[in-house]
Each structure stands twice: as structure tokens, then as C-alpha cells.
Length: 325
Ligand code: 13P
Image 1 (cartoon, rainbow, N blue to C red):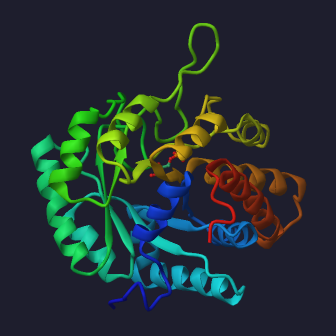
Image 2 (cartoon, rainbow, N blue to C red):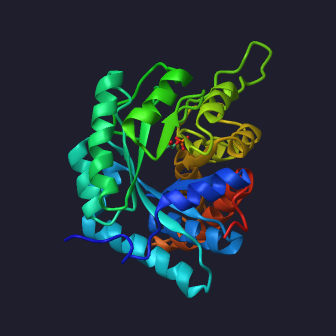
Image 3 (cartoon, helix red, strand yellow):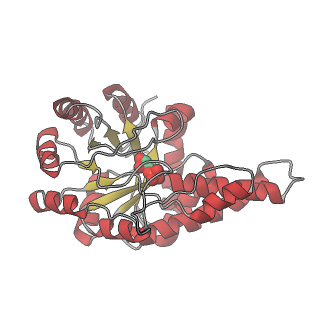
């Protein structure tokens, strides 16, 4: 079945980014894998009056299927409309790995797609992005591309990389001009997954490469930059997971202050996935331990939703996107 994103009540990211760039904030791009997360996201954006981008990974898109993905986004948009607020909400395909998958997502009601050609040689990345742009723009859908490589993997079952490769800012400018993409994800020191920053010898954390952002924005003023891999990996959730039967590594995420600083520069979209996962899972493990006699999942699902809402309100605050409608 085909869907038109406008008929689903979803927004195009172009206007969201123009406002974010001009006013110096970033739109939170929030991944979800459960209904509690999705409801927590919508609760938070209604309370904070923040624009939002729902991030759907290729794995989740496959798992839910076209129909369910489109309808969930439509319900999220309807909940916002029913609240009486005019909050823009977009449905975005995260890390689309092929032209065909981007086409499928666009036909399935996504208002924005990412084509991730970052592992391809420069010219091939441009050619693939151009092809997706031509298809998407004819349908008023926006396209995010990626240049530079982020360490880590998106989620279990996906391919990861061991090394980061900072984006070359001059190549980014050329890429923007030649590919026709609407926004560009670049690598300035953030990483996917749990393992992000390696502390310096004195224990401090390295700073993101804001100079790369500045170089691009001086030459391409108004052009929206995207940052992936911006979770904070709060020790609170890592400890909770490990205390209640899990076994994950304690690592350093991206400090909130650095995400805040980037959001005031050319960065208009900031992706968060891992923080939502570990917050939801940590609290699920905790509640299951505390309620050994429970016989259905509502013992934790009902309690998780407000916890997720608080997490996303915090993200909105860091990115400065509250009251931007
Ligand atoms: P995190 O793993 O830091 O949450 O980043 C997610 C992401 O960039 C999804 O594209």
C-alpha cells in the first residue's frame, strides 16, 4: 500500500531546519523501538511544544512493515493535532542503505529519507545521493546524506566500523553542491552505539570538532548539518542494567554541554537512539526485579512511558527546541 506523508499529517523537514538554523537550536531526531517510547516522545513534544523527527531504522521498518510504520506515525501526528498544537512531526528513514529502500520508504509515507553512502568512494556516494534526491524531490520529500565515517554500529545485526574518519570540510562543501542533498550528516567526533568518547590522559573528555561545522557554515550559510551518535550514555542506566542482571560496559557518551553547543551552530538535527534504549531497558529490568509476581507486561509498560517522557524532555532542553512552534 502507498501513502502520502501529507495525508498522514506529517511534515517536511525543510521548514523545520530553516527555523532551527535561524534560531540556533536543533530538532531532536528520536529513534523508537517500542510503543512506550513512541508515546513518551509524543508526550514530551506536546508538553515542551517542540518539533520532532521520528527516526525509524531499516531493521525496525522491516520488522513493523510499511503499513504499521505509516499508521504509527499517523497516530503520533493525530495525538499532537488533538492536543490543539501545531507541532511539526516528520517520519525519517535512518541509514537507508540503498536507492530501492529509500524509494520503498517514500512510497510508504516517510517525509524524509537518509541515504547512507558514507562507506562508498566519494564519487559513488555523490552519484547514489543524486539518484535518491531526484526521486525524492519530485515527491517533495527531503534527503539526508552522509560524508565521513562514525565509529560503532547502529544496532545489533548491522555492520559497524572500528575507526572514525572525520569529515573533510572542503569535501563536505563540494558534496553538498554536487549531490543536491537537503542536509548532511558529518563526523566531528560522535559515535554510534555504547562506546563513544575515549577520555584523555587527565580524565577529561575530548571536544567535538566544532571547527568543521564552522568551516562548512561559513561557506554554505543556512545549510543544515546533522549529527548522529549523540547519546550521553548516563552511568545511571548502565549501573541499573548491570544491577538487575545485565552485563554492559560502562563508557563515556557525548556530554550534554557539547551537544548543546553543537545545536547552537549549524547543526539542525541531532539523532538519539541508544539513550532511549538503555533508559527503557534499565527500568524494565528494575521493575521486573521489583515485581517478581507480575504476569503481564503492563507491570512495566505503564511505568516506562512517563520515564521515557522525562528523558526526551531533557533532550529537548539540551537541543533548545522547546517552544519553537
Ligand atoms: P546514538 O547511538 O548515540 O544514540 O546515535 C543514534 C544515531 O545516530 C542513529 O542514527
